[in-house]
Amino acid sequence: MLKDGKPTLKELLARHTIAYTEFYEFCLEVPTEDISVMYWHRTCTQPGIHKMLKFLNQRAGTAYTPEDVYIKKMY
Image 1 (cartoon, one colour):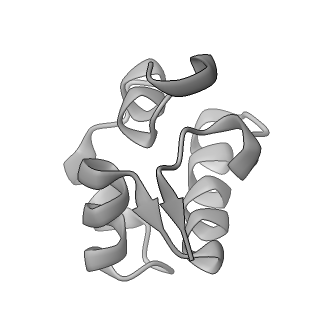
Image 2: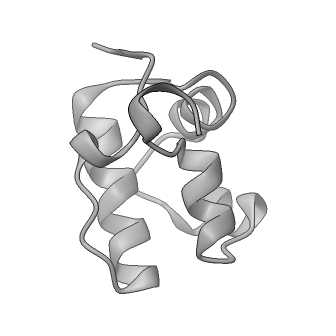
C-alpha cells in the first residue's frame, strides 16, 4: 500500500487472486494500454478506472470506487 493506506490496482487484483493476464484479457471495455498504465504507474482516465473497477467488482463481488484505490494521477 502506498499513500493513505489505499491499495493500488495491482494489490487489489492480488487480494482477490485475479491474475494480471486474466484482468488484461477479460476486461474488454478498457483499452489494454490504459490497464497497463494503471497497473504499473497508477495513472488512469476517469472513465477507464470506473470500467476497470466495474470488472473487478463483478469478478470479486466487491464494491470498490475510485476513492478506494491509490491513483497517482487521474485525468
